[in-house]
Length: 360
Image (cartoon, rainbow, N blue to C red; front, side, top):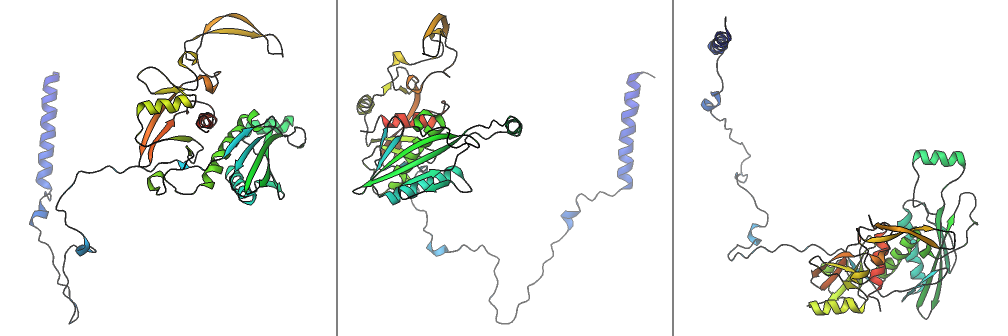
């Protein structure tokens, strides 16, 4: 028997099988079309209100009729930046200081709340007096299980970071001095108090505290969309992650925008993309630039040039030599400059440094 005949016989057999099945089993697929609905009359007590099967709309009489439809207006999202009060910031050799227009007791409460939010659950303050606060050591880089086990074996644990605050009030103005030190396990006196600007973790805390001070001292509004008191004289606004935006005013022209940037030491980059930088375009570091490959000669900082190479990345470039995308956000209160520094390892520090350029 050839293959063609086998296919014909097989197909015929399947068809006969299906036909036989339909002969023995009744098809109920259309039974629902002959069924009639069952209706029961609701029996209610005498004198009851007649029930009606109708859609009930609450407060229907208070809803106005749509007579003159208008074009749909997209709701404006709330602005996530908060207005800041003016807080002066200064750097010293071994500390940084904040100058606040408030009493020392209010400044201390802001610091305590800030440390609590920074630490999370548990006690965040190790000790405090009338004019000082010392935090517990913070662990900004928790170890994994294997790293923790190795530290227990070698008894070499990573250092933690503690902070010291001193408050000095004069005529209703409070100066807050901030220092930090690295605390090693089992020995809390090995390193003296230093300026937080010498350590990335401590510097991030210091710049975030600046925004916290300014935000807590200015509680005029929670969102720019709901602001009714206008924009304060201080041009810097801050969000809940410690990033900053710059208030540029209303009806800002392009010439006025460039003038504000120039007065603050910020430069617009040429090209179609919206980019700015803290240095002129010819001093901005870019991938592909030809740079010197130097070999350090000792601890005194001297280097020996070996040859030229192409820059492959910007990991070793400081925030001042980079260019950043920006956008101007238009809100009810005016225009705001938002600089995108998310490409950096410590974006809150760069955002703070750029914001400081606009503080007079």
